Structure formats: C-alpha cells, structure tokens
Image (cartoon, rainbow, N blue to C red; front, side):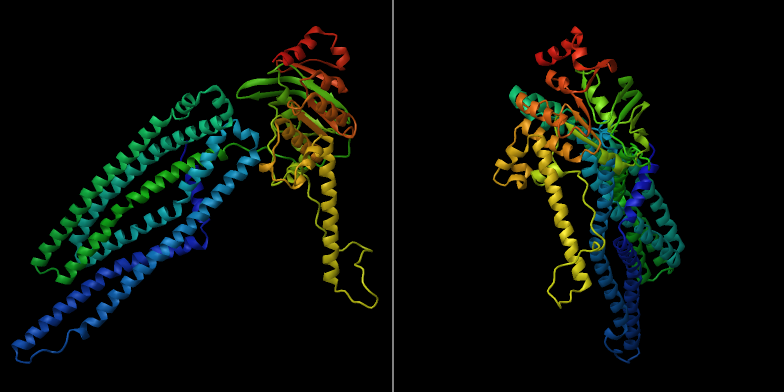
Length: 623
C-alpha cells in the first residue's frame, strides 16, 4: 500500500492540534533559538574573563594594581546566559504541555473519524475486517498516530540547531563547519535507513496485534461454548498463535533501534572529537580564541543532537504504519444515499433480478418478487438458502451486485438516509440492545419530536386578570408543555410496541419497570428478542423486516406476536424470515428460497401440498 495516503492522514491529524500545535511549534523554535544563542553567550563570558584577567595582569606589571572586581565586566554576559537558560527551561515545560494536548486532539480527531466512518459503512465493514481488528485500529493504532504532532515538530526543530550550528561554526572558522557537515551527513544516512526499515517492521507488528485481538473477540463471543466444551487451552493456543510472529517483529524493531543507536553512538562522539581536534589546531595556530573554542565545542554538541532524532524517527515510523492501517478502513466506501423523498404509499416492496455476493460467493441469484403494501410475506428455506441475505437487501443493509430494490416505486439507492431508516424497521435473531434503560432500548432509533421554535398560535399560559407575563416566559412555558406532550406520546409508543411484542408484561414486573438499566435486567434469550421486536415495531414506518427474530420465543409467545403482526401491525408491510409452520401459515404469501433462488411462491396451504416444501420445516425441527 502506498504511504502517501497515510502521510496525508498524518498531516491532517497534526493540523487538528489547533492553537496548541502553534504553542508546541513556538516553544520548540524558541527553545532551539535559545540553545543556539547560549554557546555564544557562554563563549563571550569566557572571553570577557580572559580579557579582564589579561588587562589586570598587564596593570599589575605596570604597577597600577588591580583595576577592580571582575563582576562589572562579566555582569552583561552572565546575565544573558542566565536568561537564556531560564528561557530554555520555560520552553521545555511549555513544549511538554503543548505536546500532550495537541497529541490528544489529534487522537480524538482520528478516533472520531474512524468510529463515524465505521458506523456509516455499517455491516459492510465487517466483511473486510473483523470486529477485533477494527477495535485495535480504532484504539492502539489511533494512539500511535496521535503522538505524531510532538514527534514531527520536535524532529523538525532538531534541524534548526544543526543548521544553526553549521552557520555559527562557519562564522567562527570554516574548517569547523566543514567537519560538522561531514558528520551530519552520516547521521542523516543512519536516520533514513532506520526510518525506512522501522516503518516496515512496525506494520508487521501492528498486523499481528490486530490478529490476536480479532481472535480474542471471537473467543469471548463464544466463551460459554468454550467452557462447556472444556477447550480453554486449545482456544488460548489458537488466539495466541500469532504471538511468535508478534515477538519476531518486536525483536526486529528492537534490533533496528539498537543498531541505529550504536551507529549514532559511534558517529556522534567521533564527530565531536574531530571538530574539537580541528578547533585545537586552529587555536594553537592563533586562528581561534579560547571563548570561540568553547562556543565551537557547544555548537558541535548542538549539531550532533540531530542524532537524538532517532527516538522521534521511531515514533514517526510507527505513526506512519498505524496511519496506513487506519487509511485501509477509510478505503471501504459507505453506502451512498440519494435525495428523493418517499411518496405517500402503503409500503409496497419489489425486488427485480437481485443478485448478492458475500465474500465472492453468490448468495442470491436473480431474485424477483413483489410484496404488496400492507401484506405479510414469509421467507422460508433451508439453512444457507439466502433468507437473511434477502432480508438484508430488502431494507438496504447491503446493496445488490445487480438488480434493484424498490419501496413504493422508488429505488432504495435514491432515497435519502433519514427517510429510508424511518420507513424501515428491523428485528434480528440476536438483537443488540442500546440505551441506558429498557425504555431507551425500545425507543432506540425512534424519531425524536421536533423542538418548537415558537409558541403555538392561540395557546398562552393561564394568568390572573391584570397579570403581565413576559413574552419569553410564555414561550418557555409553551415549549415545556410541548416537550411534556412529546415525551408522553413517545412513552405511549414505546409501551404499545412492547405490548405488541409481548414484552410489556415482563418489563412492568421488574422493580424499576421501563427505567431498569439494560445491564441489570435479568432477561432470557426470548425476552431479549421480545425487546428487539418491540424496538422494530416502534420504529417501523412502512416496512417491517423480521430476520429470524422469533427463533427464541416459545410457541405461545410466538403465536401472540403472530397475532399482533396480522392485527395491530397489519398497516405495515411485513417481511418475515420464518422457520416454523405456524409463522408461515399466518402470512399472506410465502416465498420459498433454495440455493439463492426463488423455487416457488404462493400461499402456505398451496405450497404445503409439495413434499419438498414440507421437508423444509421438518429439517428445521430436526435441527
């Protein structure tokens, strides 16, 4: 994968540091400038001491005695040096604070983008990456990429002391500058090689991390099965199978860092010795003063500090690799929506020559069917016949490879996201309950009532004769009354949906009723399914799709929910994936799938005459 998209992502993340990025850059630049000025100030102080001592020695030899204390001539240089030291300390403190805040902002922006994009793609994302892999990228990899601002700014500002040291040494003596440049070229070569190899090794390390996380998430999902089978040791070995590869990549990273560290540790001292040796020769030849030699010694240390960029180069390499993994998530496109509104209609659903592939395998092939508005259609078939795929494509949880799906004559691709999701309600075999309480779980996805912008005409708060009520107070009272009515209507919708799903009774028996926290509600699998059904009933506008959503219900409860589907929910178009005879018998029509194709359709009674149709339900009951 090209590194350019990852580098662009890093650049955008770095810019999200905002004013703190500017503060980090300013602190780093100001600190670098102070570091550059400090050697000159110290060298000036030394030269002032030498000149003062020489002058006093000459005066003593001439019989004039001491010219006075040394503090006068040294006050200026020492004060300048002290101020520069204080400035360096202050800049370091500000840099640490700004680096933390800007890094946190960059990570926040990256994580927000990853989460929002993953949810916008929806189920399509899990066809490319496992949940554990996605969580690893949104967690560990985001944190690694979020450390980029400090690494980039600090590494960039290290160039300033190096370049400034070359210029300063050139002003002192050109031969010193030539010696430093030769050494810096070696350090840059070491850094480039280290950066290239570390980026590749980091990618392998992060990939192994993601594989372990993915398998661990899968194992946790099946923890009861693993415990019941007594296969804990085998599963632990399976989850940790990538561990040797993770260790190999980790050791490779350490070896790269150690090798580069040794190379830098050899080059930097040799560079300092070379510059000081040249400086000593120039001093002996009278080309340098003692203060200039001291300044040169300090400048070579600053210039050779480019070697300390090794750690920051490692961070940037890991960040580039992590950003590359994040960019892979962004390459999965979210479904596009149109802007056509849904016209008034009964919720008629039509599939025209629909073909769907999952992981390259064809699960539906040329399926065409019509579900008249306000009717109930049962989808039956053996396991693997394509029932769930048909349910998914009917409400646009997935898009067909070929063909079209229409709701009230409008292709689903052309409908806006909001009107489509308000028109279609889904219930699944294993519903995930969102919200703090059971009431919120049922209301999840339910359209919130619009907040009033102004008081309703003809409505005003009750006041005593002669009272004067401010306009804004009356408006606030009206808004509160509207909100209370909307909350009441919402609660009524939730309770009616729960009653239709046979969930109202067991929820009311709980001590806190609908206010019971989801995590504290003692619910069986069938009760969880009933809450999921209630959520779908509350949300569905025109089309209600039940994908094996009654598989955990007992026979009596399933019959009661079936009566609700044909009674109080009869105004909706209903598409039901059915495994039981009773559910299929209650439907207005049955579509019989086999190997991803429609084998037959019609009423249950007519299809029941076919022994192969009866065998579908016998196979389900046997399993």
